[in-house]
Image 1 (spheres, helix red, strand yellow):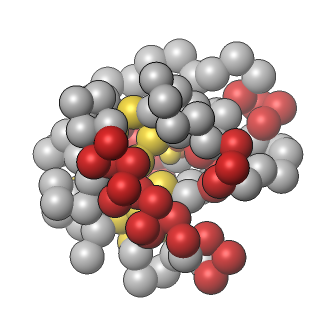
Image 2 (cartoon, rainbow, N blue to C red; image 1 turned 120 degrees about the vertical axis):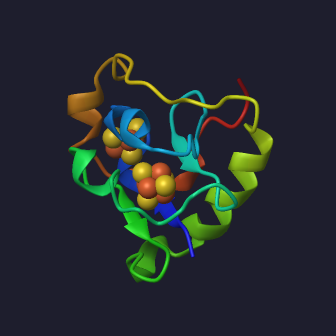
Length: 111
Ligand code: SF4
Ligand code: F3S
């Protein structure tokens, strides 16, 4: 099992989650974070830290976001060298994006 970052994170990237992870499981992309499933120890610490409720255990991901399970794994591999374990400023307009509809096509994969 592992925890999974889902759609609400896109274009927000508040990063509160990354600072509390005891095993540095988070990887950073330009406008989204993922959790590396090989690193996550299912401790649940990150879930309450996210102001937009983007993080779920993989067996509780809402159906509409189930494809994020595979996406986290793929992007965590792609961004493997971009470990993030501290909080940084959220993205500009994060609070506006928190209210908007988004989709995985909004994720910037290339740094
Ligand atoms: Fe890290 Fe725990 Fe969240 Fe997994 S559940 S990503 S180990 S804080
Ligand atoms: Fe994203 Fe929430 Fe973490 S917005 S960066 S999952 S605190």
